[in-house]
Image (cartoon, rainbow, N blue to C red):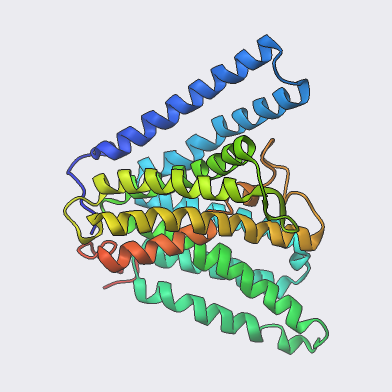
Length: 328
């Protein structure tokens, strides 16, 4: 289990530090944008873009951090809503929403895997991925429509893998009494990873990373993000996992690098989907960011990757009660 001092939501100093640092960054960035606006040092379109992004973060941050602070059920509930919102955008963009049987199975799968997390039933949690994939493979066969079978089934299985099985790992972490600092670290680290990649890419420039997939990303930006995110996660992770096998500097650096690489891979995964569909954003619900999926794509791969890394060394909720709802 993750070491956790007794007390409330702010019992762990890392939790308090992350919240205060996030609020400070939000305040400083707002002042910086205000200075740019009044000094006229940026073009009107760029200033408008910055204000939109800042306003979106003012709404997003309470929705991201609030449930984590409120408790286990709130965290799992928020992950469930996020998963359904991401699937909705994916289904509309790919046309999968027209396949009602498949969409129903995916939604039920998302609800089931998050229920397993809420129940703290790990056996059911891990079994739902292969079981749901099998159900998706056969559920449309009775419709007697072999045309398009491979495409719609592949789209559906990918959807559940990302928005059901993948994201649900973030919620399952909340079954550990010491989950708050780790989940908050992941939420803030993936955001910092994006900012570091953008900033380093703009300042250094150089060769494009994958020009056909994401024309604005550079090799320097990618490497800069790995350096910044790895450093942050390793330093904060040392305070979170003190006294555990994961406190080894080698594994902390590996965890930090995994957050950055998996985060960038999730971003590039979504970019590949969007380029294939010929669209710029998956939605418009978040001004300056695009859709919910555009903002949270990094977590799709970071959540399961870190869950299993931390689970191997420390475990999640090993001493906590299980089968909270379905047990005797």
